[in-house]
Length: 253
Image (tube, rainbow, N blue to C red):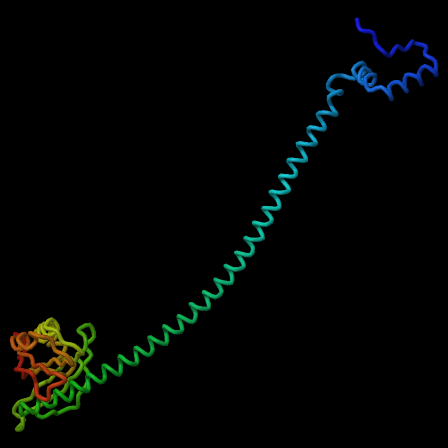
């Protein structure tokens, strides 16, 4: 059995106690043996384990501090991005408001142009219609006007006319378009032959018989052939005389 380097009798003198203390303080081996004798292995290993824990804790908190720093940086960038986004949204709202204002202005101007253009075409159609009636020996008995017929639509130019001795009275109607296609001609001819449309005309004060014309600043090919088959007159902006005279349309049976 190994002999304990520290042998203290049950009745050690003060001098012996002081000698032992000096020995413990000066000799690491004695201190270690004393610790092993007095302390459990867990308590002996505690300083080393605490040092390991402290090292690990320092590393962990160092990484945590780094992560927090990165997070703070990210939050700062996010705040900056949000600020830029708010600014962009404000600019976008302003641009949208300006755009809405511009669109409203454009719509208003387009509306004015359409009104002027429509009035201009109707005026040109009226002039062409008067020349056509003169060619047929008819005299207008009313000024030109528009005929609104609710769900049945509208006629751009209408007037009444009669021959020189007043023995023949007719209602004259015309549809005016910037460009006339054969489909337009056919649709107008079908309307003029519809009993429902004729009845609406009568209710609007334009009873039959009728002379019906279609006027266009531009007239597509085949329009004359279709108009002739439907007894419609065809008027063109570039022609002083009618392209085709209208024939009388009687009330549908």
